[in-house]
Image (cartoon, rainbow, N blue to C red; front, side):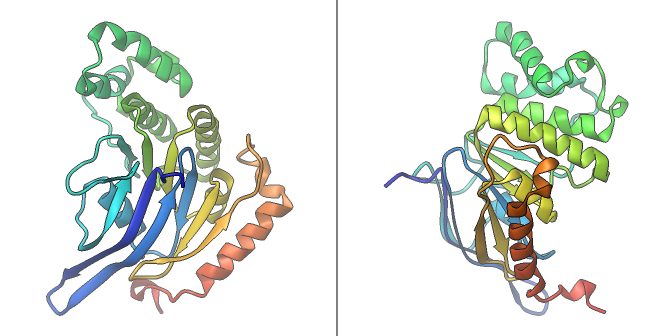
Length: 263
């Protein structure tokens, strides 16, 4: 058997509130293959983002195990895992070049190699002419591309992406999503991608996982049999896309609304 790139086994998370003990995740089981792109959708509050934080070592879990290339991750921030947040989290006092260069410094890459690698990454994300700009001088979409270039500089084996295009307007979101899809098809790393946008999930992923309302668990999985390379916008007009979207919406609509949005 081929060892999964990522294997989540019976993962649960509970914590105590003032009144009771709250179960956030309940027995989550999910495998991610080498070079596979998996998107996770589910109701608000189901634990999608929490699951990514646990994998990234930014939050603890109370039961279960997580394996990367067959090795138990245990506690702490694991090597080989990179996370892209909804907030681009750029350092505002550093230029684009300096933000992208930071992972190279941390990784110990020889300083003589930094300039060429940063230039290569900025070219890849379409920002070759913006190396000396500061984050405040960039649009939201451009900052997202800087954040992606910085993660690429780290060169993780597994990408965790938590609503990375969420704050963008619809037009920019489609454009950046298309650019990211082309970059991923060149890089070919494993990706676990959280989003509220079902269409975005289908357009990007090899497989879409639906989570239940809290306590979150895996409810269903949907293969996306649409050939690659894909056009991020045009793929939405295919019959396969509409069939999968209908299936996923049916799964989501059968889940109860969170208490915070009930009338």
